[in-house]
Amino acid sequence: MFKRLSAEFLGTFWLVFGGCGSAVLAAAFPEVGIGLLGVSFAFGLTVLTMAYAVGGISGGHFNPAVSVGLTVAGKFPAQKLVGYVISQVLGAIAAAAVLYLIASGKADFQLGGFAANGYGEHSPGGYSLTAALVTEVVMTFFFLFIILGATHGRVPAGFAPIAIGLSLTLIHLVSIPVTNTSVNPARSTGQALFVSDWALAQLWLFWVAPIVGAAIAGIVWKIVGDDD
Image (cartoon, rainbow, N blue to C red; front, top):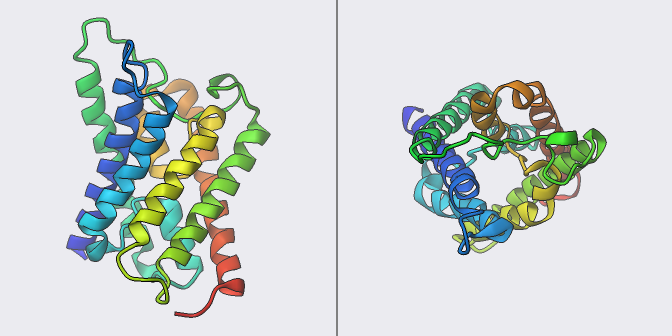
């Protein structure tokens, strides 16, 4: 169990550090910044790479919503859920701390949004609470549904991380303007702790919506998905 929890810690660390790091450090770099497209691919690549690296140890969740959804679908034992969630949140916080240390090393550093998730005036595109809620539920639903399908026993082995990573890329391509894209409560928590203020006040949405979306996906999979 220690190895599994360590794998989840490291996987979530890499997801947050790579994904949010690309947004904080590289997205708007003068003239050669990677933009929203680059950030979207960065998040997808973090999941793809760590799923191959440690997925065989822990299953490669890196996300409390994924762990909840897999539990609801009957693919993950409920007694391990709390340990996984704690490890994921700690990994995200550690990544945010390292990212803050690096970002603050710039002479004219300003914290700004620090890639935190938000709605209303803190949405990148000014989208409402309702829009943010619907977006996060729908996106997490499909993310978990794709995970369940890609890891099914009838699917050729070894290709699941590619489908999962690309699905997270697509999710970010669509939803960064709405919420800065969460679909992952741990990712949201790490950044919110450093932004504080509004980010902590709005953090509830980025726990509730992804978990609801993932749980619905778990239920739907039990209805329409084939047994392994």
